[in-house]
Length: 388
Image (cartoon, rainbow, N blue to C red; front, top):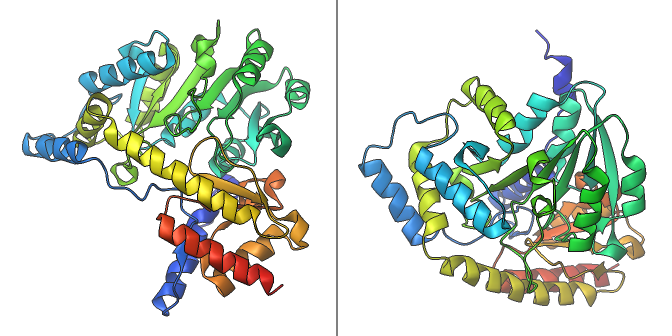
């Protein structure tokens, strides 16, 4: 038998491909510094782990309600209402095994062949993957380096059409670390408010920002909450990548539709992980702030090191934990640079083209590694670059 044709439209995450290659090199005795995977290198906070263990001991090892445990949905609703300044009810929340279902389920529920979806490019590759898989038309909007990797608003407005069914936003952003300025978010809201479309606002890095003001959610502008899906979760903020726990906040009618899709796929999210997530939201936030402060320290030193290398240019990102370095002036393609850094310098990183056409010429580094390893990586990149 052959696979269905739609399988040919699925993309992959290059980070896992590079990780596999790097692990194979390590198995042969090479010393590799891993800057390819977007995963906090911190442990899950101890009170969250304790809550997960208690939930197991208390018998939370069985099925739960498909959209999530009521007390967990309420905890999420209260948290999102508090952090975004909006009204959120339990019926607006679905709890999912990781954040990706909050991309996939609404897209599956909403998109028809021929519908257009606007999304950031470079951007998380699963956006385009899901759009193509469902037979919709991806409409990439280039992120502009000179604007802190925000949209060119004129290009954005010109890209809207009667076929636009969804607009994907991501701030703070993967792979650039850029944050969409509040004025730009308001302009996007103004352009979308009276159109028959929905916003998928990927806010998974919402707590990892380095300025005084938190990134602005488009839901805070008039008329936008009822046409927006908030994607958030626990993986990045609470170093819970392996717990597989995320959530979506959306209009009730869409939450109901996504619940039907969950019944037909995952059934429910593991109940003990949900209770760990509740403890994360409601418990002390000291670990989050300590992690963010350490990320800031690493960001400042790592970006300064990259900017000291001839031919390299790296904006200091406003959020997330990625540095997106421009290597166009080196005279080499970003793929050549990324491949050489792994094979010759022992630094695992990602070609920006893996995040879309407009990522060509850039290299993504995750600075979710120790300060010492990051400085060692800078030394290796400088030495490699000096060799020409």
